[in-house]
Length: 94
Length: 143
Image 1 (cartoon, rainbow over the protein chains, first blue to last red):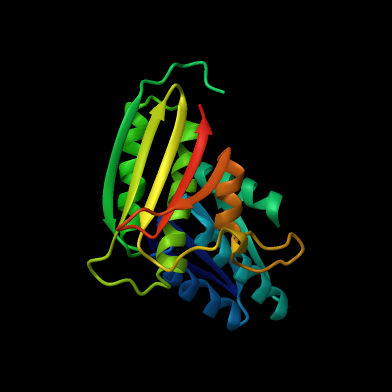
Image 2: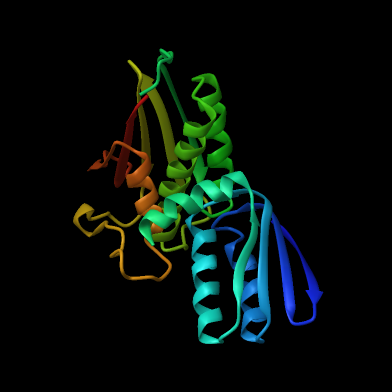
């Protein structure tokens, strides 16, 4: 997994790509959570993510919860087909 | 249920018990499912279920601290259009009664992997592990 962060005012647009599984979920977590912790709005672009499992979904849940605590915004701006599929399964659960 | 009659097949592979192996597990599964001509959407779901089960071995049966040479085996077999995926490991014995996904109103990470496995597969069964194995998980799906 690799990432790129765009900065526009207080917004941080985080682009992740590759595969997000247990091995790299900490890298994703350590990329996103500090931005939210610092009070930035985080817009997550997952359009180039080829695979995501429950570890990746956990990072999204943690990010959303932290953004609520910090009263900032965390949202998905674009998702790939594989991610959408996993999200749709996860939504049945959440 | 699939309209295709999938050929009978049996293949297994051993992997080191660590998170770096999860990608290899996915590649192995995809290769086997290619041979079985399983359609793309179902293939993605099956790969996810298998990867989640393998992840549970790394994370729970070995608490992310397996011996560097420790192995787990994934066996995929198909007979009469019934797909069976077996996992063998020598981690902490699993108590099936304690395996459950979290409550639906408890919005926090964790437990999703087990939910995915149950959603995707027809049956999830822990059998007695025969020596040298301790845990023997079997996932089944009618194709």
